[in-house]
Image (cartoon, rainbow, N blue to C red; front, top):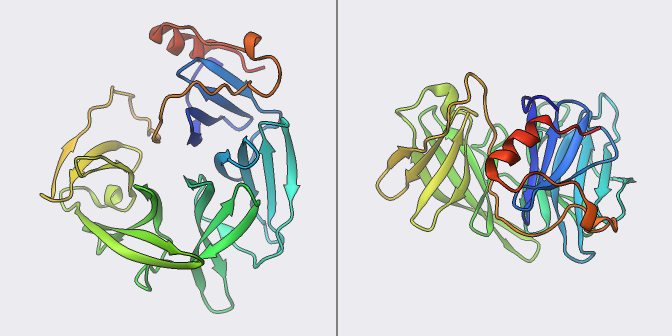
Length: 287
């Protein structure tokens, strides 16, 4: 692989990053220990979600295939433990996912979705339980969310964000009590100083302990917002030219993507030195 252009982050969980590279490859990579594993199947078109099945001690990648006019939704699940894909049957109401990549929280992956009714397009939130391998439909925060919200994680809760009159971003937090779901408005982030095309695509990556919201905006910049004082600071990122970038929350671990295949001691590795890791990742051949 001669370039890292076209890399998408499909998910992050327990120190493993799931990356889509170009149109043909998916790898699971632990940058901390420098090990990676190439999945058996090319990525192709679809919306993805990645996470951990705690009941079966397994890491799973979910691929929801576009309907293309069909009433049936195709759902494929890759198991790191079995190193194989399987098709999961879905018998509920049809929908189309809006997000290319889902948001992981507490063993479920969440996407914004839409359903074409006879008179209008209805935006909803759907989740996929990685243990039960079943979908669930959730309500939006309120009727003012005319379009699907951008999803993120707020502490231990799912959060939904929307642009308010093209000036600010409202952040709502989801609360669950049994099967009941409700939403509480958590904060309003003032973005009046930003161009509109960035405001429209602002979503929190995480909330720091000091109360700052780390916002990825339009794939172009990363800011930390102080919600109490309505101030912000720009987080410097090394220049990457005219390319947009992706971001996710990553926590280091010693989890190996090759732990299940019996070849852990001889698994592919990337150089121990940080610079060697970057240079070797740029040139290693996934084939």
